[in-house]
Image 1 (cartoon, rainbow, N blue to C red):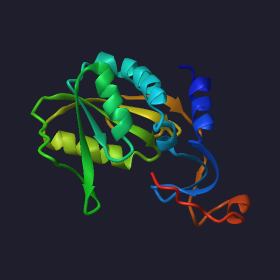
Image 2: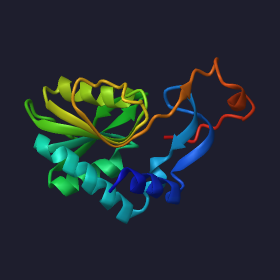
Image 3: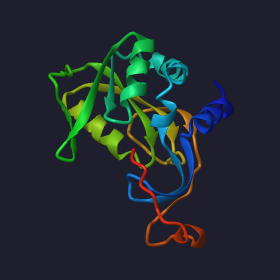
Length: 187
């Protein structure tokens, strides 16, 4: 899939929104990627997962680890495409944790898959959990990188759709955004 095809998929599914949005990071933006809208269509998931899996195949993982909720659908599809195990971390009292009996073995080669990265907080937390279990975190794969290439997770990051999206501190908004009530669509 080309960059334009991926963008069109997001537009067609209603996953690329325009307005005034409050991001998980607390920053504000004129654009919001609600990947869940694109990832509700299984043929789209399969197409995106295939392209991301091909980018990640060279790292030879045995496991895909994803942060819930955003990474669940695409992470599972990438694992399916690579024919490897899929596990996830989930929030418990505001912090991500490995639960449900999932185990990570010391030295286990894994990749982390997420839908959207802006500041990389949830992915960094997932990397830390994997490293606490002494896993070898080979790479991170994301569908959309909203960080403008600034996120450094200490491992290679493969992305399907790098975006240059302006974000703003809520105390320093441009005039047009101040005139629009902010929406927190959820992520």
